[in-house]
Image (cartoon, rainbow over all chains, first blue to last red; front, side, top):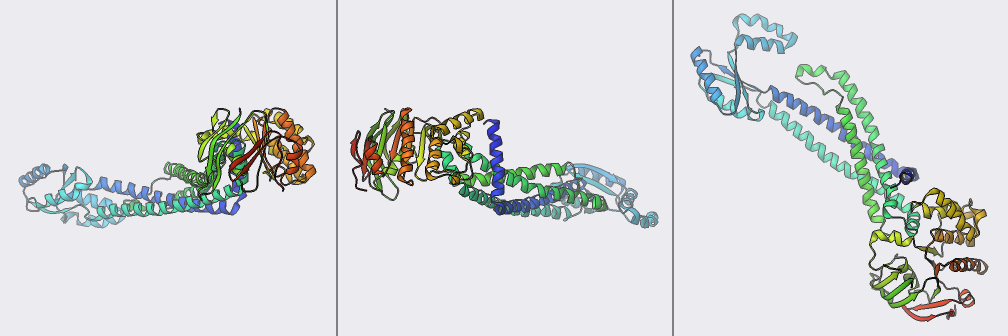
Length: 297
Length: 229
């Protein structure tokens, strides 16, 4: 296609947006709402995933050793743990080190435990890492059966709940997004249908004087694409500023809860690109749907 | 030979038999009237020539192109070789006379410099050079039809198809249009014109093809209208 022709198509497509203002407004609004939800869910899922990843990395089993076990017995236990299937590594954690970690993890409140250092109630323990986080549970139950093990602890239930939440957010997000995508596409298709009906005469004349179908279609593709892209700008700005604000305000505050928000960049650029892409795609798809039906002249 | 129909039949989906076995040949440079009562199949006959309708059976040849077998994507190229004019002009009311004619060249991606020259040339032929900037609504019916004719011939088609071009015009204006169609025919373009205008057919004697019930019932060189209305 000649560059001049492309210029003509863009001009015509843009003009079409103004010709049926209300439908244009409705389509853009639908795209805006849809992409806002898509973007918000993406940010939520990204954060939940990164949280889950960081938790996964921290998943370890503590096998507390019976107080009565002798050093020989402890050594024997270590060998047995190492021999267990799917165990990646075993390290010894003395009760003093255990207390240090506890005090550290509680920040300011930890100081209260300094006083019990003399009569440390903790057991010595082996810290066991499974070859993969998903195998933690089965490894833990095997280790628990071994002699001289008093109890095991690996944050039972928490990891599973987190995975379940991430999965649920993803499912709800996808259902919502798909539903809204179809609504937006339907509205865009309708808007373009109205343009086509309004320009039926013009199209008929174009066909009579020998315009190709491709030539006739182009302005409608441009129109659809513009509807999608313009509709994506508002959610991109809203999410960009909103998330940046949220991050600067609360980003670090959750850190004591082992949770921190992902930094806004580069994620916002990726989401912006994705939203523009989705917007343009459903715009073009919507126009293809209505143009195909109407150009069979 | 330029246009040839070989045993052409056309049935519409609701089982209406519009054309029932037509065989004709129209030579290059001919001027042909197509006459017949309303609903006799004239419109279908005309529409098949520029491939708005596809025959159900039979072959329609325009030069080497077989319209029964032409691929969808080649139809635009066919249409560029055929100029079509209608009773209702089919002009775009938001565009000026110049723009209406130029439109036909813009949509086939003609070069702007060429467009300007060609449009002014045809506006000269239809004697509307001085109205180039006017909008269709500011023109008389005859002038509007002349704009439509200019648009139809701006691409230098081999064939000009006119479906009742004088149907909406008073007798004097109708003759103006006929002058222009004659002029175009003199320049070598084949003209096929469906008409109800008895006066014109009987005065400006040319070949007459009469269609009734989808069949050619009469084909006379320098014929007459032959109906009473």
